[in-house]
Image 1 (cartoon, rainbow, N blue to C red):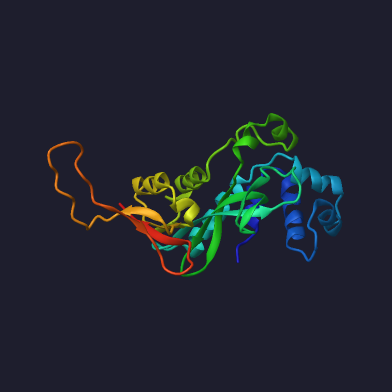
Image 2 (image 1 turned 180 degrees about the vertical axis):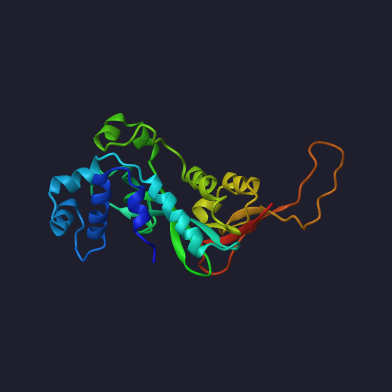
Length: 254
C-alpha cells in the first residue's frame, strides 16, 4: 500500500493539497457518475471549486509522478522487471473533451469517438503498477487554436506520435527503473523506427507485430554476389502465426 503523505507534500499550493484528496475520494467512491457536481456534493464543497480544480486550475502533476516512480522502484523494482507500454482508448459521446475524435478505439475494437492515452507500466514478480502517461493529442487538435483555447491546452503541449511519447517516457524514467525488457502491442511493434530506437538504447524488447510482417531470415544463406549492383541480403519472408491470431511477438536486443 502506497502512502499518500509524500504526494501531498509534492503539491505546491495548499489549495491543491486540499483538493486532490477530495477529488480522489470522489473517484474512488460508489458514485455512478463521477462528474464535478456529484463529487463536490459527496465531499461537501462548492461545485464551482471542484469544476475549476478539474478543468482550469493550473497545477503540475509531474512531481506526483516522480513520487510514484520512486515508490514503485523501491517496492517492486527488480533487475528483470518489465516496462510495458500500452496506448488505450476511452470512448466518448461528445466533441469537447481534449483530443477526442473518431479514431481507432481499442476499447470497442472499431473506429469510434474516443480519447487515447499512452501508458507506461511496470511489472515484476511482486506486482504491477502505473509509472507515467501521456494524452495522445491528434495532429488536427494540436493545430486548432480555437479548440486549444476552449479546452485550456497548454502551449507546450504539441503533437507527438504515440511512439515518440513512449520513447520520451522511457528516456525520462528508464535509467531509474530497473528492468530487463520493454513490451508493447502491435501498434508499437509494427513500426521499424520504434524497434530501431529501442535497439539504439540497448533495450531488449518483445513487441507484437501483424501476422503478415515481413522479416529477414538471418540464418538463411546469402545469395552469391556476381560483381554488379548492390550486394544481396538474406531473403525475406512473412512472419505468420496459425489460427485466428492477428499478431505475433517479435523480440530483439543489441
